[in-house]
Length: 80
Image (cartoon, rainbow, N blue to C red; front, top):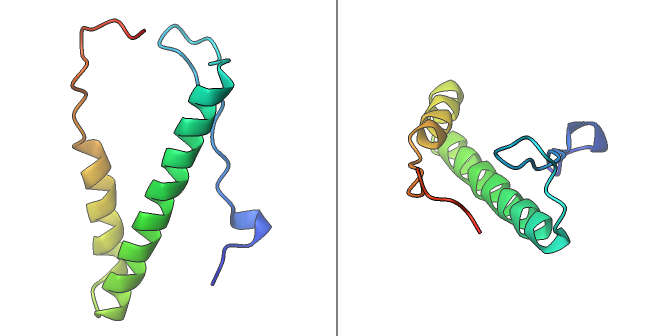
């Protein structure tokens, strides 16, 4: 079932590490498209798990943990 307007995820105002809004429209577009792809993949994984009789809370916890374990390979490097 598609989400209602009330439940739709709205992407944030993207900020630089200095706290300034990102102004490049192409960067914002790519970030928002990436988020939508991730949202859809997570939604599919959640639905698959539920249909395979897995615990919804465990699925959600696992997805959160997956995000928490993402590695920043650019630590200490200045972005262009």
